[in-house]
Image (cartoon, rainbow, N blue to C red; front, side, top):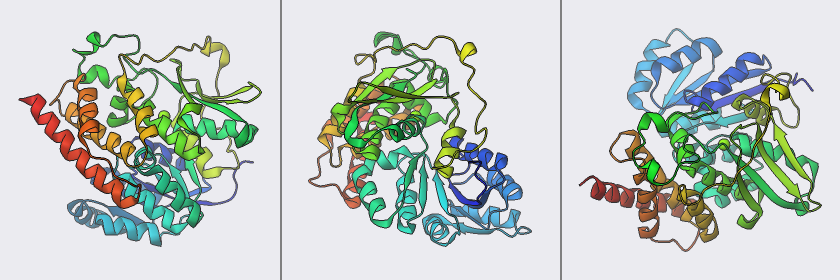
Length: 390
Ligand code: MG
């Protein structure tokens, strides 16, 4: 199929890395009509997006940014809403058939929950909402009829591989990892790495937060939790393998030992196009893969000593309830402190482990307990960081 039907789409978090790539997909596919956009405060970027895509609705989370934007686009037909209520109103009111949630961090859970209320398709790039509140999110989505299509290269790959077999026939989901910029280094060698070195990802161009998460392998840990929730498999059925070329985006091994892999050039636009058009495929979502130029594909084991956060993610998945939310919150606080150059790269796991141990457990997983655990873990992680800085 070439996707001739009109796809009305809203992009939530339209100025980040995946948000702008989603708009690029719309730019190259005239059947995608952008109905609404949300952003935090990047007024100039959103103004340019309004001029190009003419969405009927826009919401800026930041009130001042909304005021500024209203003045700038007074000549357009776009209505500018503001604050959390504005985001909720936009999601409820827009005539979109599907939403791309590319908000960065735990904040994206709000948009995920609002989209689920509509029962419409959710192309989900905000993995933190599935990591922190996965079981609650999946249950609510099932109830409302929202179909969640992952916009994360590994999960998009697994989604495609799973079309070749039955759920009961899955032996393992094999998630590939590029290894990030520090694969092959020892724990000691990571002590002196700089912010610039940590931000230099070898194969993927991404936002700052996820690039640091890739360098610590926390991102891979989150993807293990994300896969368990999205595809309803237990932690013992998920493996991680380092594949530095980032050509195979993940695999599914079936009970007969057949392994199905999905390959393509590393480009998120394939995932966005797949999530919006599924079960159809669109022509030329990314440039074709040149196998001869690509050459050898290699696979190695992850190093649990140098990258302990991957192991902690498996533990949080087994601990269940609000523990993945605690892991996510502690990591977000630690990464932001590293991005502000308040702590060293090697302090990130230290802060996350300490906050994980110190944050109390909740007896059940609900949306409310996730928000409570998130707040507690953030406060405790901030305390750990101030102790390190002294
Ligand atoms: Mg990924």
